Length: 231
Image (cartoon, rainbow, N blue to C red; front, top):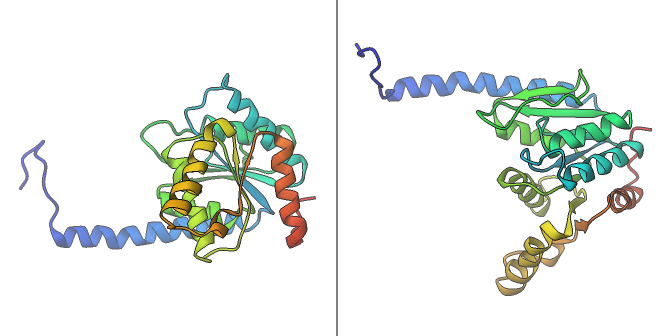
């Protein structure tokens, strides 16, 4: 019997039992996510830092970009939290468009923002389930300045397209001053110096600075593939 306050290492059988029960929770998150997201029309995911303050120029730019996206008939999906995520949902809300939030339970930073449609707020415990929803139900990624989580989503999308695990969609980096160094490194080091990627792997990455440029990339891409937004 463990003494009160004493930590106890779980035995292998207990670990296996806990893992087995976790499978049902994971399946439940997938089923719930698929059911809700499948009812939403063509959307664009907007990514960026949860730490971006409302007085940051990139916050307002994210609002303007997302508002323009919604005005052009696309829904907006974000991670549902503060910062750039809040700005993305706010822009969609201001335009009267579809505003989706895929929330994650975190010990810090994350909390629901008030601009998500009441029937389109989903909660997740598992990052990998949440990431599937972003990729499966998005027709494009708009990537604002962010941290490790933003980079994670960006490179996962590129990897899935590169390996033909998902269909192509446009990946739009917003903010030349933030992204140009990374993009230059990808081109000069990954591609040019080491040859670890192919030139076509970065063909769908677009670097822009304005809402109009974002819409131009999205519309040009989907005129080619004949996808209709939520008009």
